[in-house]
Each structure stands twice: as C-alpha cells, then as structure tokens.
Length: 140
Image (cartoon, rainbow, N blue to C red; front, side, top):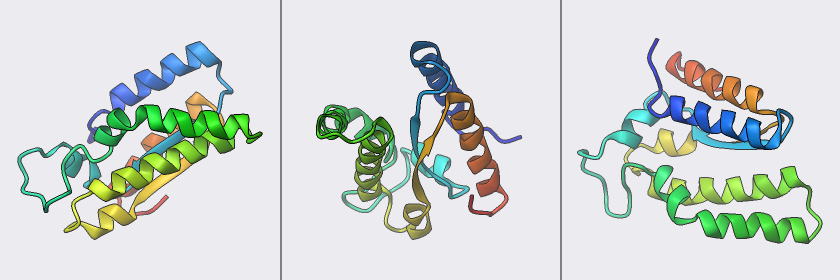
C-alpha cells in the first residue's frame, strides 16, 4: 500500500488531540484528494510558476496559524459554534493553500476540501479513505 507523505504524522497529531480533548471533539481536516497531491506537495525540486510552490498546505499552516486562530476565536466570541468556528478557520487555510498550489496542476487545486469530522478516529479513517479513493481515481 502506498503511504501518503506525512499521514503518519497526521495520525499522531490526531491521537494527541484525542488525548487532550477527548474522542468526541470536532476536528476540521483540510487537504487535497488528487492522487498526486502528496507528491506535488513534497517535490521541492520541481519548477513552479511564480507565486506557487511545494509545501502549499504546510506553509500557510505554519505562517497563518495566528491569523487562523484569531478567526476561530473571533467567531466563538460572536456566538458561533465550535464546529462552525473551526470550519471557518479551515476554510481560510484551504483558501491560502490554494493560492500556492502550482497553477499548471488545475485539477489539484480543484481537489481541495475542508471537512468536519466528529471525532479523532473518524478523522483518521476519513483521511485514509480520501487518500485511497484518490489513488483509485475516485472523489470522496
């Protein structure tokens, strides 16, 4: 079975969240379902058009973390539910990452998703399921 780059780290992070917040805490997952998404994301050697890059999801997660946390906090203070607030933060991350996706790979940009999972175990299973479906050329 092919392994998605970083899926092990994602699983470990989800397990950490499960320990900290409990099994039933909502989780927002942001990713790409194109079967080659992980390869494009990790390929630092590829030539990209100006303004696009490898690490198109990882980079905004790192550089926009405070901004995204602010979006979530502001939404919660305004009375939004935790799930809706997390979804708003996830959508911001998705939008930021889509701006960095290599434009010569339009299908990759279109395969972006943001989803709420109701618990950590479901989030892990969904991430694996999306990857498996993408490998088979299906959308999930």
